[in-house]
Amino acid sequence: MRLKINISKMKNFTLPIRFGIAASGSLIAYFLILSLFNLHTNVFYSLFNGVITGFAIYEAIKYERIQNKEGFSYGQGFKTGLITGFVATLIFTVFFALYSTEINPNFLEELSEAWFSDFKDFEAIVFFTAAIMGLSTTLVLTLSFMQLFKSGNDIKKKSS
Image (cartoon, rainbow, N blue to C red; front, side):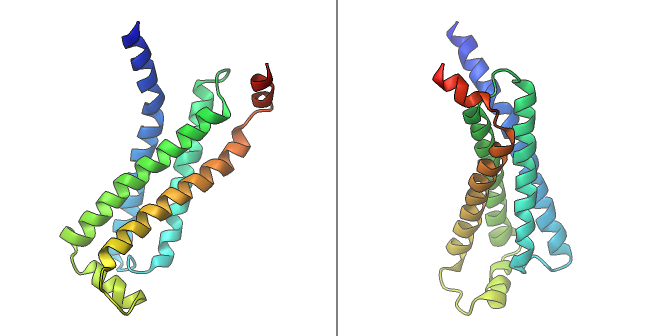
């Protein structure tokens, strides 16, 4: 009996993890396409990352609601959105760190010259900023999308 409960709990995480992996793949592809045109040092193009992440979060919550029609709750949708965005952010941040230190070691210097005058301790700041931007985007978009997906029954369910 205990094994069935753990397996069913793991199934709750598969959908948002899959969407998070898909989102991170899209973010990485977008970044690499920008790098082909030497536009990856322009931070304004990173605004589209929110669109990519937002689409993945929206779709994950939508599919979660379709799978659990009767059992769908605000908390469940919120959890789905957060996990999706956190997975995407984690994978993209790791890729970003590898890209800027191993694949293209001159990237951070180019980025620094384009936007900042001091390169001291710039690597950690850039990685931290990428992670924080992804996590804050995840939180804001999840809260926004859950306003679309919540049902009027959530309040009635709690009071019963």
